[in-house]
Length: 307
Ligand code: NCD
Image (tube, rainbow, N blue to C red; front, side):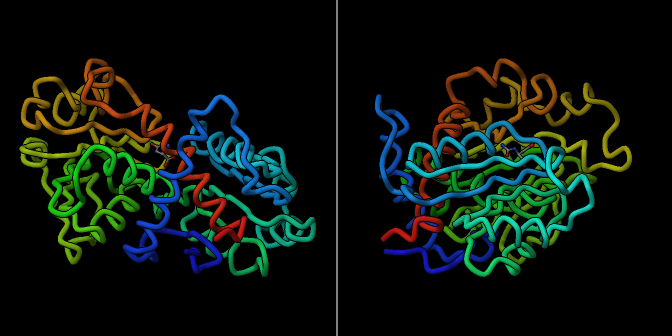
């Protein structure tokens, strides 16, 4: 089965069947990540560019590794080292990359909607959104869902607590779109100034009491304070934030069967205590491994034109 679309811009656009297709593909490709010989020919003869206008460790590197494990050619462009610095528009950058014959572009941009604009200008190359402003981060949402699927029997009826700065989080939005489509019950908890709005129609519940979201949760997804997207004080101090909203061993007692996720980068002692960050309940490094598998799946499906 093929993913019948040119671009992956967000989980808002995907059907439950498409999500399942990608997760199944990622599961099938995952053994390559753990294999002593990491080379298969799925992207042989294909080339893609990663174009990052914002910092990244996990996302950028896992796309690059995914492409290389699949035998493709991967070129990395960071905005600070590109002609964007000389005033070139996104459109011209895109057209020039396409003129070089690339099959795909992976883009991270500070502005929500930038990947959609790029996708419109590119006639042949597929676009994958690697995070746009606080709009979406679909491959993070997918790797989170793959991690959940590996640990829980079904998405249906799962209580997923997303804790922290959902307002400025593209990770939260992709999780909300993806998980609600698959039948999970999503809770957002955080200070009222940092709660994402507008998802009531999807059945998403919000609370300013972290305990209410944690009580009996099956999955806890902890978010970093997105300070780079805050133009004023949304909370008093990091220490006070930790006191009221941090994931601590004491609070974890409310959800003894939950897995703890974090997209990284973690700020230990702020949104998550160092103890919880290292505790057995967490699946933070498995998430990273799943990130490579998910990126292998989406690049194969979109850039490889593979069945
Ligand atoms: C996230 C991002 O950049 O949106 N990180 C990531 O991709 N792993 C979350 C964050 O920066 O807090």
